[in-house]
Length: 297
Ligand code: CP
Ligand code: NVA
Image (cartoon, rainbow, N blue to C red; front, side, top):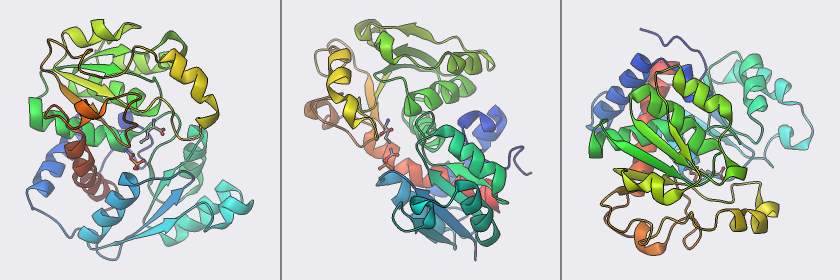
């Protein structure tokens, strides 16, 4: 059965049942089932920002599925030289079977979806990173089941916001600890409430971690925020995921990567047996292959 949505701009474009189905398919694909399902399909991939995991996992995923991924970086296409996004969308929609885009403004991925006559996948905007959430939920399922408490400790932007909504859809209990100045958008909690969740919100990372089975963090200085570095480093003082914050806890630790060791997480924690970051990174491939089949096949 086709998904209710034609585009995947944030995690709640799926219904909870569809999310479950995508994760089940991802597990099956990880186990080696059902591979070549998109022969002769092309995924156009627009990147306004750098990427290792998103680019490499989508490109590998399309090859595994029998199709092709086309990398369109900021200097490669006319979009970076003044051609409007809506024109780019109209044209790519006539060639490709799907468009994946990593953009700054979330409104831009909505413009892309409005004008491209094919499914559009959000590969990260300043507000959302739903492909990461798919991989995160698959990783939590594999390691801990879904009856877990997750503490989000760090910045309240893209990765965290999509995760909070996705966790609500999966019935996962979340506590969010951010500095007051870098809190999540209030609409995120309204969207979580739509799925019956009521995440605890605090500015105290130690309180968030106290009962957590999983502690999740992300960089403090996101792509495009380099000029805010000093102010953000000061605001996030005390939010580092380190052995002291985790003392007395046997929580696993998640990180979407790339990590800035010594800022949001220490080298010791990221290199410890607690770290699920490498499984999260691998699961980007399996989760996105499942999403691609559901959206494009
Ligand atoms: N986690 C993630 O999206 O990584 P990249 O920036 O390397 O794609
Ligand atoms: N919050 C980070 C996530 C990187 C995958 C950023 O936007 O740079």
